[in-house]
Image (cartoon, rainbow, N blue to C red):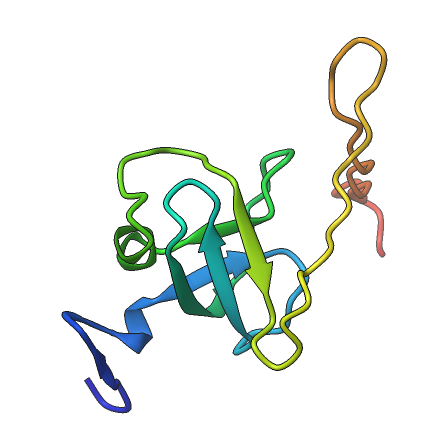
Length: 114
């Protein structure tokens, strides 16, 4: 692979993640609060879009964290330059237990010009 740097048995290009707001190419250190392991991932996608989830790591990153096959688990995100945790506010639950969601954009009718 062009540009890939070996790190153990995986390459850095496979240690990727999806985040809703961080710019593509941002390097983020992910620390598993379950295993205590850390790995640096590069943001290369958008998501996850499920309520209460902040980041979705690649299969290789999950394996490096020792969390492969564990499902959804708690992690801490650190920006390597500042070692400050990335803060992301989650939707506020409604009284009936459902998460609040942004309204979906309205689509124009097929016959109407935009």
